[in-house]
Image (cartoon, rainbow over all chains, first blue to last red; front, side, top):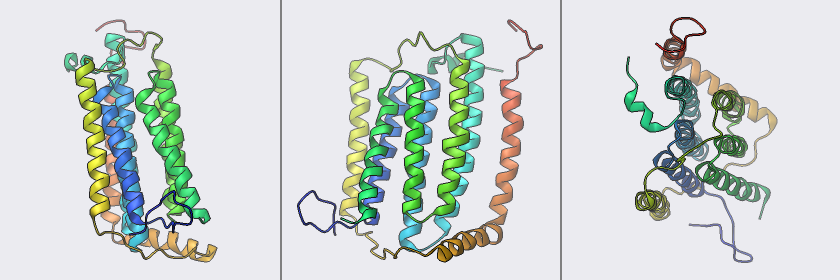
Length: 112
Length: 178
């Protein structure tokens, strides 16, 4: 399998595997953002990063398989992600109005 | 090294660095800025993958609308006194970062070991072919996937109503406490 190497004169062809590896790395970074941050908005940003990583994998598959269905699925994911960001930020505004902070631990006091 | 390989390397470097900056930077405004750069780089990567419609939607919806939403909500908040931006103690945080490193390493290793290297890399399409690709995407979207498309419209409507119901202030515009 051809790989990108820094060796002089090596054959450098970008394959599907490179895109999938990049997608996996971005997904892991988004997961770490959700795990170690306490700000609700930054956690939402981590979720957006994960969704984008999945989109990248799907578009790469669509390109290398010559099948346009992956693009359509990525389009659907984008729309749902926009809706999800709207709901999450609405909840964050609600939390901030009550507790004057956007920490994740405030979620347990939110009811009704 | 041809142009597309070079572009892939530069864009993947930008994506990894700025998405890591989203995690590392304690100020949420800088995190939002890094996220915007990541989204734009991903949009260019979709161009590289010849998904022109998706690239446009990425730039308009993600780098435009969603980022404006994030930054606007950040502006609503008074985040000068951001205490405890990161969770837990030192040990738990280290454990979480190690989890992330292990996860990404396992994914990359699995992809390297796998035999999914589809090497049917097509040539650079002409502009007429590019238009044809967008057209075929639209044909599929409005024939085979039309039910999902309509369901998505209903979902957006429900979400719009739901967000207003969640975020409205009860008891007028100047309600102090309820």
